[in-house]
Image (cartoon, rainbow over all chains, first blue to last red; front, side, top):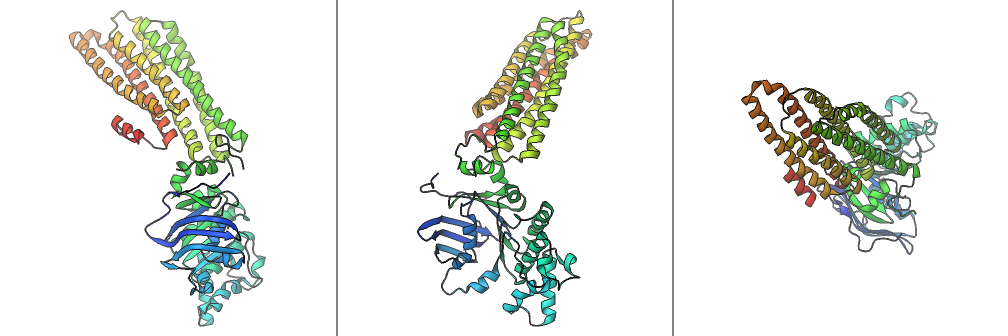
Length: 267
Length: 236
C-alpha cells in the first residue's frame, strides 16, 4: 500500500474556533517522512480523536503538538503549529512552559516515585505557580478533584503514587497535568492499560474536562473514539485522510480508507 | 496489510452480515408469495389459497423474530460501524416492514373468506387486481434494489407507490357510489374497502423498504420525505 499522491484531506479539517492549528506539517525521522502535509484545526473545548492503524503517524502528530518530538534527535518537523495563533516552533518559544500549557498523558500511567501529594505539587513548584503552602494545598486538592480522584486519596496524600491502582494512577497523571494549568491536554492511548471500569471513569473525566480544556486523544479503540470525541481524524500512512464530526465518521465516512478501517476491513 | 475492502478481517463477521442479508431476502420472497397468493385468492374467489395464506402467516412472524435477533447479536458482538452499521439497521427495519406486509396479506385472505361466502356482487375487481399486481412488483423491486444497492431502483418503487395511492383513492370513490346507490351493499363494500386498504398499505411498506435501500447506500435518511425530495437527494 502506498501513500496517496496529491491527497487532500476530505471532510472538515479546519474549524472556526481553533485552539491549535497545524498547517502543512511534515515530520521526518532522518530521511523517512512520517507525516505528510497535515493541516488540522483543534477547536476550543473540543475533544478530537486521532485514529488509524499502527504506524499511521497519529502519535507522531500528537507529539508535535507540544514539541515532544524535539527529544528525538533524528526527528525534524516542518510546517507550522499555531497555539492561539502563535507558532510553537518559533525559535523564541521555551518548550518548558509550552509543555505546561499543552500537557500530555501517556499510554502507561507514569507517576513519579513520590507521594500522591508531591506528584501533583511537583509541576506547580517548578513553574512557580504557588506562593505558599496553602496555595499549593489548594492546587493539589483542586487538581485531584477535577481528575475525580480526591475522594479516593484525600486520606492518604502522603502515600506513594505508585501504590494506587492502574486507573487511579492514570487519573493521578491527569491531575498532575491539570495542576500546571494547561489549556490543551494531549492523551496518547490513555486507557489502553486499563480495565473497562477504569476506562469508563477516564472517559467520563474527559467529558468533564472538555468544559475547561481542549483535548486531543489518540486511541486504538474505535468505540472509545466514538464515545469521547466530537470530531474524529483518520490517519493513514502519515496522511490525514479524513476529518469529520464523529457522528458522521462512524455512520457515513466519506473516504473509502476510513470506511475500510472503521469497519475492520484492514488495520 | 490486507487490502480487500470487500471482506472483513474477521471471516465470521462477513458470514454474520451475509447471514442477515440472505435471511432477509428469503423472508422477502416468502412475503412476496403471500401477497401474490392473497391477491390471487380474492380475484379468483379461491378460499383454499386464502386459507394457505393465513396458515403461513406464522412463518413470516417467526422469520422477523429470528432475523431481528441475528441483528441484535451482530450489534452486541461486533459494534458495527459505517456501511456495516447501516446494513444491520436497514435489515432490522426492513424485516419489520416485511412482517407488516405479511399481516396485510393475511388480512386480505381473511376478508377474502368473508367476501367469497356472500352472494353479493364483487366490487372493484379490476382495481384490486391491478393494484395487487403493482404492489407485488413493488415488493420484488424493493428487494432487488436492496440486493443490488440500487438507488434508482428504490426511487422507482417510491414513484409506483404514488400511483397506487391514486388508484386507491379512485377505487374508494367507486365504492362510495355503490354504497349510495344501495345501502344493502354496505357490508360487502366495507370488506372490499378493507382489502383495498390492505393493498395500499402494502405499497407503503414496500416504499419504506426502498427508503432503507437509500439509507443503506448513501447514509441519507429519507423517511417521511416527499417523492420530489427523495429524487433531489438521490440525484446529488
